[in-house]
Image (cartoon, rainbow, N blue to C red; front, side):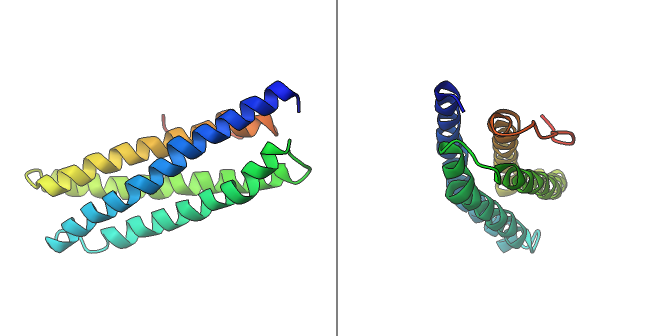
Length: 159
């Protein structure tokens, strides 16, 4: 890997960690608080559990990137990096699918309870979070990962 390519990869890694990883970690507790408020109103039991599962899966994924993938990339990669990238890409697809399901559930609730301010706030916050998650996935799949292996397909990932 050339010095310029290595600098570009390191800048992308820093951006991903600062904007997306830290951003998700800040947003999830706020989303969980909103979901708990909806559950307390008796509207939908299980929002907190569903969102908590999304958060735990995402945290495990980000941990793998921060502890394994990013250090590997910062050192220029190695022969196992493509296998790890393939695994992480599969996790991206699963994160997107899980978020799509949760988003649909919250949208449906928001439509049914249009006058509920807390539910509307949750729906809006989930939309923002989902958008950030998609941008995070795209930054990795479309920009960072191809620096170390063939581009991964992004079919099925909405803009």
